Image (cartoon, rainbow, N blue to C red; front, side, top):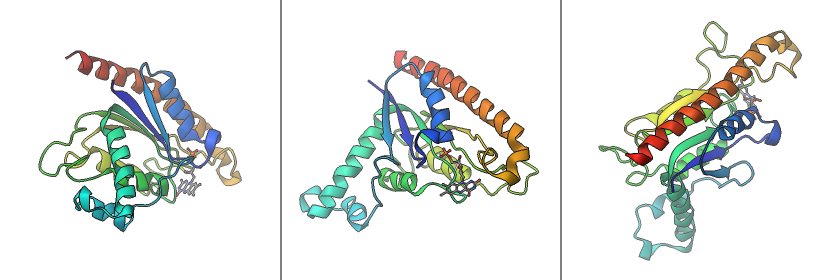
Length: 218
Ligand SMILES: Cc1cc2nc3c(=O)[nH]c(=O)nc-3n(C[C@H](O)[C@H](O)[C@H](O)COP(=O)(O)O)c2cc1C
């Protein structure tokens, strides 16, 4: 049976806003969930053995390539077995947390999860990215356009030539406002953003649940 694949990557445990909003999504999700927590169980960086294992026949693998190929097989099968995705990926240094970047590097493989020149096996599957960020990045703010995570993930996950997922992004922001004095005047905007994020997560779970249910009956 297909399932929702939820991937967490915030290092902040239960206090993570991305996790809390992702929890709102799964609370409203009516189906099986496979959960991978990259902060609790990091998978390490892709190395030379992992790259060369992809183009070396299995019968010729070194012990290092065998180990690397096993991990890639596990991640790829887990990815392809899902019919919907929930990625909780906070903004770290204007970009993607390294544990999630490592997951992408291991999982995006030409000929398996991406097929340049043809539709990817995951093409059209719905995916939600929840990305909490400490500052505010809306139009008119000094940081507008400097969140490089959202465009990168929307491209990597959503580009028709890559994973081709149907990506929806939720960005609860100004999460620094409750703890950083210079941002305290932005608390109302933070609370509004947070409330909106939980509402969107709930709605997306219902909408994506309807989409996957329809696909199962057609
Ligand atoms: C290592 C690290 C780097 C961060 N870099 C940024 C940043 O570049 N811009 C920003 O707005 N917030 C930044 N933050 C703040 C986080 O985006 C913010 O705390 C967010 O709530 C983290 O998501 P989480 O609550 O799901 O853990 C950073 C936090 C950490 C721990």
